Amino acid sequence: MREVTIPISDATIRSLKVGDPVLLSGLMMTGRDAVHKWMVETLIHQTRPPQGDDLEVAEAIRPILNGGVIYHCGPVVAGLETREYRFVAAGPTTSSREEPYQGDVMRHFNLKGVIGKGGMGPKTLAACREVPGVYFHAVGGAATLIAQSVKRVLGVYKLDFGVPEAMWVIEVKDFPVVVTMDAHGNSLHAEVERRSKEVLDRLLALAH
Image 1 (tube, one colour):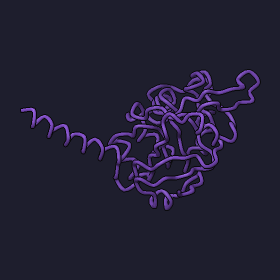
Image 2: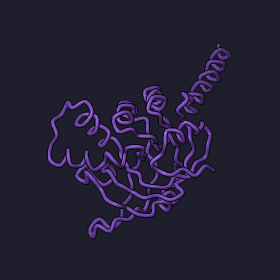
Image 3: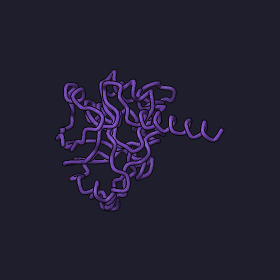
Image 4: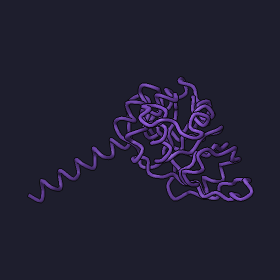
């Protein structure tokens, strides 16, 4: 297992290859559909004027994301009333929904890692080469186990998006992931898709 500390250097990112198991430690932030849409529309393409605390939040998350990692996760959080937040479950959500936004977010914030499940497409893979960055696959169905690697919840932004969609800033220790898209243009997800298509084509040919 490679032990990688966040923020992650370009040299470390380039040394990671598809198939590498990694234990991540450091600060990271959760973000799903509402967050990615907000980032792209308000901060990156600026198709929507900033409202409320938008600009303050942008300044607060910039240093967390610079060289950092975003986790596609809608956590189950205890302690909402007392603000003594604790992650009860922190499993990954499907990443493909962020494909329209992820590449732009990676470039804009110098984001080095994206964690989720199911992989992402060509736009994100292109950003992984450019930034450079990688996609880390987290184990689906291990939400409680993953939550144990979350040592502290440091804060939350955009709680008005709802608990699962808010930006939670967390400190993790030995968070288990596997590199499935690297900075060299390799994607395990694209490879699986290609092989599946070959098998399907062969089956269809036999059927005829």
